[in-house]
Length: 479
Image (cartoon, rainbow, N blue to C red; front, side, top):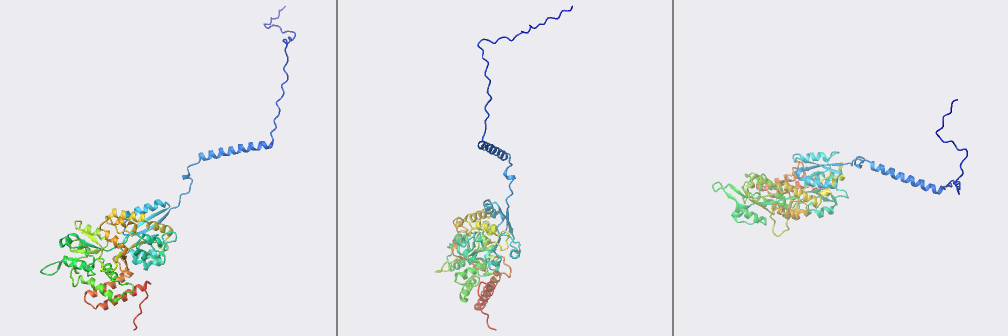
C-alpha cells in the first residue's frame, strides 16, 4: 500500500472565521454627480483658446520672419545729367554730396564740358528730345535759348527767392515776366589790377576817377629816349587787338556815361568811345605792339590792367613773384556808381527727362548753404575763387583781398550782351554786337568820322537786338 505524501501547507479551515468584535461593514460609496456645462459658458472658453492660439501662431511667425531689407522692394533712384562748364567735378562735389544726402533718391551725374564748341553742342542738345537735365549758359545767351528752357516750377525757385538771395543785376537778368530761368553760382566783374612796386616807386594813390587813372598812367610810362617807343606802359587801354576784355571795359564806360545800350544816343557813345581811345592815341600810355594785356602785366610791361577775378590765377602762374593788388574800377565824378558783371547760370531744358528733380537741385543751389559750399570748394581748389553770386556769402568772400573790390561793386553792377570770352558762335548775339562795337572803336582810333562810325554801330545794334525781340526794329531809310 502506497502512502500519500503529506502536504506542507496547513489544512484549509472548514468554515469562515467570525468577524472581529464591533465591526461594521462600510457603506456603499456613491458615484460622483455628473456636471452639466451650458452653451453660454462653453463658447467664451473656446474663443479664448482660439485667440490664445492665434497669438502664439503669429508670435512664432514674427520671430521666424527674415529681415525686412530682404523682403522690401528697392527704392527707385533718379539720376540727373548735369552739364557743367569751367568748374571741375572736384569743385562741384561738396554741393552735390550735400544735396544727395538730403535727397537719397536723386543722384547727380556731373559732366564737365570743354568750352570749345560748347555753344554748338548746347544748341543741339536743347532742341533734342533727350537733353541733359541741367546745363550752364551765359546770360548773354538767354535771348537765343529762352524758348528752349523750362522756367522754375511753382514749388521750387521763386522770383522773391532770387531777389532776396542775389544781386539786382542777377534778378533783372534771370527773372523775366515773373518767371525764373536759372540760378547762378558766381558773379564775375571787372577790377583794376595794380603793380604794387611801380605804384610805390611813383608814390601814387589808387585812382577813384577815370581822370585820376589817366594821370597815374602818364606818370608810370617809361619810353626809350632814342626811339620814343614805350618800354613800360601805364595802363592797357585804347586798343582792341591786345587789351583783354576790352568789350567789357568799353561797355562799362558806355553805361557809366549814361548810354542806354538798347537805344544809344550818338553823342554819349562818341564821348565814351573817344575817351577809351585816348589812352593809345593822344596819351600814348599803351599801343598795339604790346603782347596781350594779361601777359604784359604778369611780366611787368604795364602797370595797370582791367580783368575779371579768374585772371588772378593766370597772373600768379605766369609770375609767382610779382607784387600786385586789385582795386575797384574808376567812376565818373558826381554820378551814381556803375560797375560791370558777367554771369554764368544753371538752367533746365524744357525737354529735360527729370525736370522736377533738376529744379529741386537748383532750388538747393540757390541757398546760402550751397553757395558757401561752392565758394569754399573753389577756394580750396585754386586759391582765388570767383566772386559768389549770393549776398549771404559776401562777407566771407571779402576776406580775400583780391576779391574785395569785386564784391563791393556787385550791388551797382550792370551787364549787357557784349560780354567778352563767352565763346559765342560768330552768328551769336554777343559776337555780332561786339563786332559792331569793335568797328566803331577802331574807326574813331584811326581818325575816321566819329558820327559815321557811331551811327553805323547804333544801326547794327538795333538790327541784331531786334532779331531776338529785345528792341523794336528802327525804321529803315527810304530808298
